[in-house]
Image 1 (cartoon, rainbow, N blue to C red):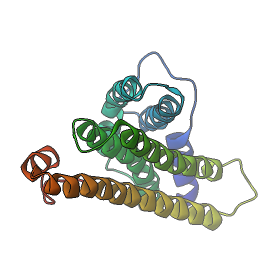
Image 2: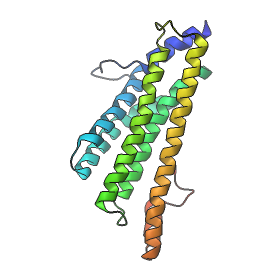
Image 3: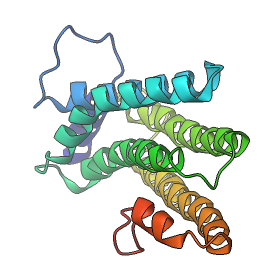
Image 4: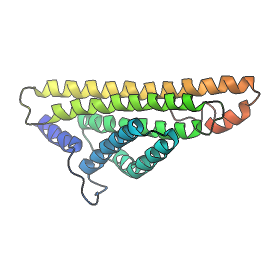
Length: 209
């Protein structure tokens, strides 16, 4: 019974439907839907725009519009353990967007990258976000209570697998960010410009990724 209640909650949490004119910030269904839709918009914007700078400005705008829902979902605490994993999986997608937008804004102010390199870095972030967002589709499909071909255990196994997959992507985005910053740091060291790079990104303790 508890598992069925969980699955009903989860399908509500992950249900992607038509957006209402106004979101109710305390409703996990609307919050989760907005996060998923926001990341889809970021991916579409990042892969279709021709000019990197105007492209990223639009990406930032989409991210800022969706961030309030990401923050609202973080405040939902009264969940059972398995539903908490569904929540955390969605939050990690939002966190990947957060790392991408905030770190790439700094990279665009970094003189140690060429325009071509920034384009390649942005493409890498987009692909990682696209891959992690794709995992949510599998989770959405299996938590649908009308899908009778899977047992409760099989459903929860898929939720666990999706959670672990997105967690791996989130960690990979952190690693990708650090590796790109390391390139700038080495170049700044050669140019005697390490203070500016450290001030831009902060030291290891300051970084949240």
